[in-house]
Structure formats: structure tokens, C-alpha cells
Length: 459
Ligand code: PEP
Ligand code: MN
Image 1: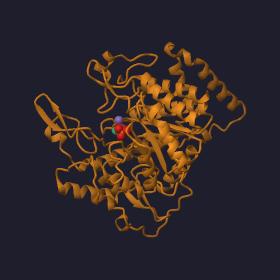
Image 2: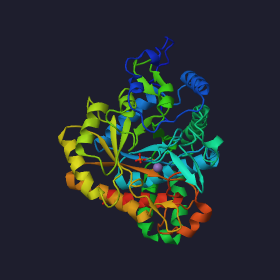
Image 3: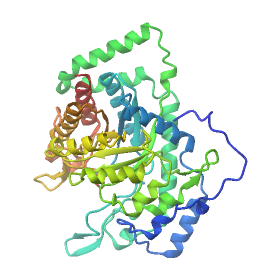
Image 4: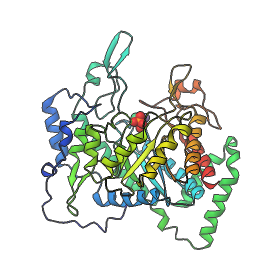
């Protein structure tokens, strides 16, 4: 993750977050998409337990990330944020976690070359356990039960017991996040991330004849790595990479319980993850999510869908980034391929004119969800790529910086999104659709996206 030598471990008593003014103001505001916990005693004991467990991430790391994102907001770095729509407790295995981290690192090498910029690597990982839903209920046949809201809240099995909202799941989400982060830290700090090795893995992608159109770019990267080697680049130093954890800060009981006062600065940090975002469904200006996240020091993202107005964006800046601090606020736009070229320009223009320096990131997934003829929630690879292209075109036209990519992806060979050069068709969904929520790009589709985006960045 990151060097903590700058962080002093003080022995002075750290003030309690409960005494910090305003941190609980959200409790009096409307909070949508919250669980209705079944057992208030379990709720009380779970929150009390979370409140004294060690932080999952450290305030010093969060500050490093804010600095990296500030560079991206200024056009000097690019953010790659990827992972599951919904992590699951069962899915937190060494194989799946390492495949996801590997895929993100592989994408990052290609993007670093394409952008000629450092790429900030961030997982939708180690905390992405809660989901907003468009309906409170789900009906199957004649039975209606509460909708699945992510493993932090209830189970995916369609039974009344599993679908009840169980606060003890928050504690399990914490421990699963801790073991996931432990593995991520080991992989990214322990030599696993050697640039030459990561580059070597990309040969597996190139070995597929369907990807021959990317050969010249792959060859260029190969020559660049050999050139660095010949120049005596310190590949040992490149064995370690920074990797940050992020998730949607949805369940406020969990986020608040993991908020700590940093002993160095005396300020509150939500230590459940380095970067937290507010979803499209919970970004109400006077709502609990915006209020709570306005009070923690972490860098914050906000999703902006096709109904967002420039006024919404300006008021979010006023609340979440009143100091106009680069790196503090990221807008993650998810307009849909058919909307982005029309809806994004007025937002970017007015935000830029206001003097705010936000980081603009594209989420080309959530505006492009469709149902396949055989009934699966899916996304078409070409639509996803088209939204990314639209995002780059808009920023190029306005002279602003397209600063990052936010994707739902996995390192596994699943079949959830349609298309790609080695195409996934809907028949493959029957055996290889694993997501409990939204469809993800699989390993090959993710790498293909990186090659396509690198091509656009280099153009
Ligand atoms: C998500 O990122 O999984 C999500 C629910 O996104 P949005 O809030 O943009 O719909
Ligand atoms: Mn999703």
C-alpha cells in the first residue's frame, strides 16, 4: 500500500469520534437505502464492536491518496478504479482476490503506457458489500421477500431468514474486508507486482488471435520495458505498487462506526476504506449521506447520472469541497453511451467556470445496463467503450482532463457482459454468470478495454 514512515504513532489518548462536533448530524436527516435491522440488541452490540476494532486503513494512507488524486485532477495522473459490483463473503477467496488485483495491475500497465502518466490503482474492494436497490422487495413466483442489499445487510438466498437485515453482518463485512486488504497488501508489497511480470501476464491476452489488432501497442510496451531494463531502471523499486481500497459509503451505521479521530491532525477519517463514494441514489443535497461524508477527511466521489444538473454539481461542490481542494472531490459520471456527449458538456463547463478543480472519472457501466433476450441483466461491450470514447471526446473538446475510469470487472472468466473481440454471447450466461448484482467485464474484456482506452489516451 503505502509508506507509513511519515505517520507518527503517538501514545497520547485519541479523542473519541462521538465527541467530534457534527459527525452525528446525519442522524437527523433523511437517509435513503438504509437497512431496517431486525434485532436492535444485535445492532447495538455490532456497532459497539465495530467502534473499537482497529482501523482498516490509516489516515496517513488516505492523505497520500488525496495527494495522488489531486495530481489526477490537475492532469498529471490517471485513476483506474475497478472491481465487483457487489463483493460477497463467499467470494473473498485468495484466488478471486488475486485474479482481480492482477487484472487491475495488468490494465494499469497498459494505461500507464497509453497515458504516459502514473496510474492510481484502486479496487472496488475490501468493503463493497452494500447495495442500493430500485425496489425494497423481490418477487419470485408467488413469494415476495426483501430485496438483496449486499452481504453487509442480508443474504442472497431467497428465504425469509436469509433476507432479514442482520446487523451482525456488518461485523463480518469488517473482518472480510480486513482479510481482503491483508492479501492485497501482501500482493502489492511483496514482489507480486513486478512490472516485468505484470507485462508478461499480458502475453496471455495477446496469445489469443482475436486480439491481434492490439499487437502493435503490445509490442511498443514490450520495447519500452526492454528499454527501461537496458537503461538500468530499478525494477526492484517497481516490485511494490500503491493500491487503494474504495467502496460506496451506503450503510451509514457501518461508516460512522469505523470513523476515527486521527491522532496527528485531530480530524475525522472514515477508516473503512481510502476512498468512499456516494451513489446516484443517495446523493440528495440535504440527505444524510452527503452530510456525513462532508465531515470526513477522505477523498470523496459522487456518481452523476443522466438527470444530474450543473446546479446539482455546483451545490455538491459547495457541500463536499467548500475549500476547493484538488483531490478532495471526484465526479464519477455514468450517463449512458447515448447521453454522454450531450449531458456531460454543460456539467463540465459550469464546474470549470466555478473555479473548482474536481477529478472527472467515467463509469461506463451503470448507464448502459440492458436485459438480454434470455433474461439476464447485462451490458454490451461496445456501449461501454462508446461511453468511454464520448467521455474523452467531451473533455478534449472543452480542454479539460478526462482523469479516470471506474469499472465493474473481475479477474475471472465469467460471462456477464456481451461482446468483446473474443465475444461472449448470451448462451454463455447460463453457465458462467456469477454476479449477484450487476454484470462485470471479465478478465479478457477488462484487458481489451485497457488496450482500447490506452489507444485513445495516446491519440
Ligand atoms: C454501483 O456503483 O454499483 C452503483 C450502484 O452505481 P450507481 O450509484 O451509479 O447506480
Ligand atoms: Mn453496480
